[in-house]
Image 1 (cartoon, rainbow, N blue to C red):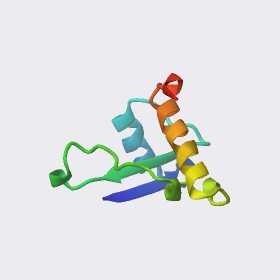
Image 2 (cartoon, rainbow, N blue to C red; image 1 turned 180 degrees about the vertical axis):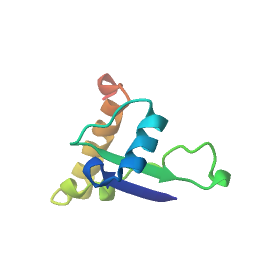
Image 3 (spheres, helix red, strand yellow; image 1 turned 45 degrees about the vertical axis):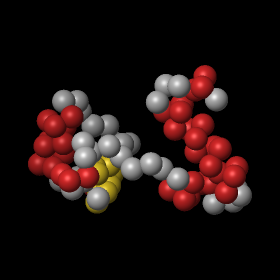
Length: 84
């Protein structure tokens, strides 16, 4: 898997136009575009599970605290914040 990340202000005009066309919406100047590329053999392209190590902001927390916070963030991002 490869992850590519660019600020919208760093995109060339043709790159930005292509991404906006793919998304079906214009990009704002303060946004960042992140694209992940998966091997076709890895399944349907679902993102791999995230761990506390994926979030630099959690560096000062112990592993248990970081894992609980990551779990809460992931549940909330999926719209299941009442599952905690």
